[in-house]
Length: 379
Image 1 (cartoon, rainbow, N blue to C red):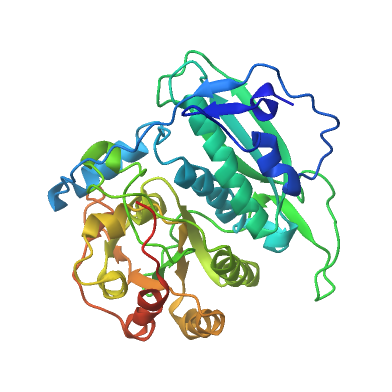
Image 2 (image 1 turned 30 degrees about the horizontal axis):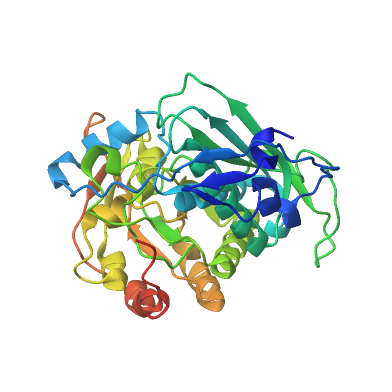
């Protein structure tokens, strides 16, 4: 066990109540044996978030997407809680597209840090990621299969990285148990769902957020290019809602209802749409009407497009729309049709554009869900 996990921390002059490994103690699926804490505590101070005024212009929409997808992800110091939970959510959302038959409770998480401990604030941030990820994973009721730290003194101040990957079902036993339907629990190593749009102009493209928190830009990849609107980060905390969304989308995945899908991670909805449509010969006019209706008419388009609230973008056929509608309503989970694809007239043209504010009927039905449930979030 790396000493980062077992050493006491003194942060901002105050000794922390527990070591990082104690934050994960209830979720570990492996024995850690007798740990002797180091005598010398790690001393550091926390870094405050950096609020930066926003400067988004619609004309820069695709340039910002290019910048996000073409750059290495930076660790958002000052937004450690968000960064840690976002990493966990991304790994779980990626598992939705895997082969096999399993539920979220059958997954295991492997957590990894690539870290430079020499910069002021980095070790305080490490401790905070452990505290935040540990609490979130515990509330999800999941197990951790491994914890790993790779020290790299050559990393830039913001070049550190915390990542997560789903392990356990696919990396240990092929068959763990059986679900209620009697089918053995398995997770394959390959993907059953393509990340590229399947050419069908009658399809619906649907955005499904997996948390009811407000769509803020603090800590996002977008904020490095155009500011964060002086905002905090999304307060990712509703584990029950995440599980409900996971189960309904996973069922659709196994049933073959989802034709293509992309996890919304760095760059949010906008970058997910680019990944889905780039190189397909089709483009997506992104309709933000339903999202604006739920988050308020004053919601800024950059928040709706680039906020990194965990979620997915899926393609379903027109004939499956009513079935999907019934499943989401049954689970009380919100979803937003964000457009229908169109064939690109020019192969060199942009594959994602911002459309008008028209709102679909289903958006009208579901528009009040997040208004009623959404908390203010963290600043």
